[in-house]
Length: 115
Image (cartoon, rainbow, N blue to C red; front, side, top):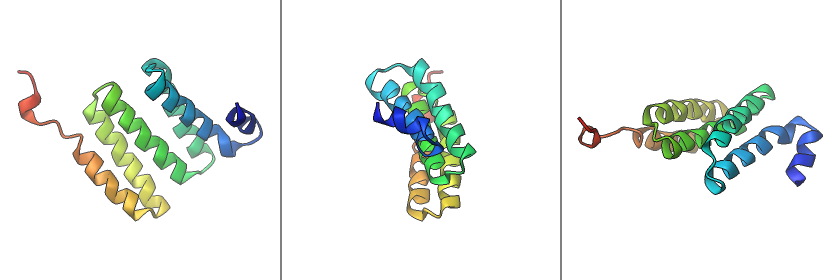
């Protein structure tokens, strides 16, 4: 409730509220249909207000969502790459390097494909 109040008063909390709601929908409620647009909204709002670091985090969490909820490894890989570029813009070298491992984790071994 507190986040909702803060979000009404300014842009600093709007994207954070959307990201929090996305995470709750995904991780707690297991409502993937509700979570997907909330991740998109968090990314859009962070971009709209030039919060590059928060945009990077929203992309990273959105990629985890794609990987875990939809098992969409190619899409997750693409989103992790976007997160990496935003962490680079922000100057967060350690997070940028972390993204390489997450990007690599999206490689689906051929042996796991059903032919």
